Length: 317
Image 1 (cartoon, rainbow, N blue to C red):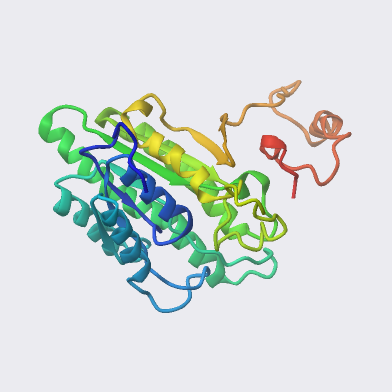
Image 2 (cartoon, one colour):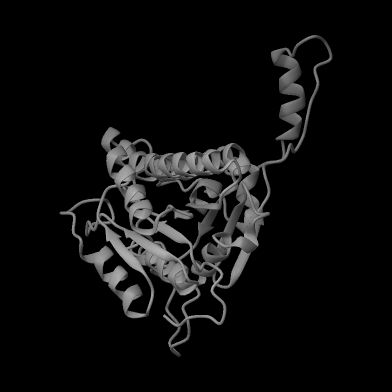
């Protein structure tokens, strides 16, 4: 980890969840490289499905790596989907560094199954870690920022970067729980952006495409460059965007969804109305709806789903 000439995050503190491995690790390292003091959170379970005994090793190793490079970092081992653990995480940041300025939500698990085969636990566990985990940390961070803003009678500095996924855009047939959670995170992000902007806080979401243990089977057929060059799917492609969104330079970026991978960043627009039909009388009849909607969808293939799946040329599930 080499330091840049300027440190745009100098004097700021950050929490990064799920930062013991993969994307979270790369993001924590980048925030530290840009000058932030970082709380590295990870529950440390070895299974990507959330199985196995919790371990302090992943979070401690990343925190140690940051300190060895001259940065500031402490580790936190805890399940962000647990309300009290999320409170303790934010308290650790404010107690150690005096305040919290940046929250990067990244922690998650996978329990893939087709919707007709998925168990209640497989649904609940993924929604819990991803969506509730994002809510828990956002809740306590927002309480902190609101209280600071009211005490100062002025806006404070706050940045939230949440992690969604293209799975929610494309529908990912074998991941109804994951796709639903990631779609919910976008809704949480835009709502939070509206609620906290008067306090000086921005909230944005990213859809990263990266090779990690969460996606090892998805990208198994895509080889790492043999010449030793940077893998187009390396998490290091994602981290700079997170660093930018966490910085003062991104003060006008709020409530946005951005797709990022392999040296590419795309801004995704809010859904737009593709067509509108008005009833001839006070309300529609079945026959009239069949006439207008039947004609509109007449040339569409049955596997063509929500129009957002056209983003970046994604194939429909």
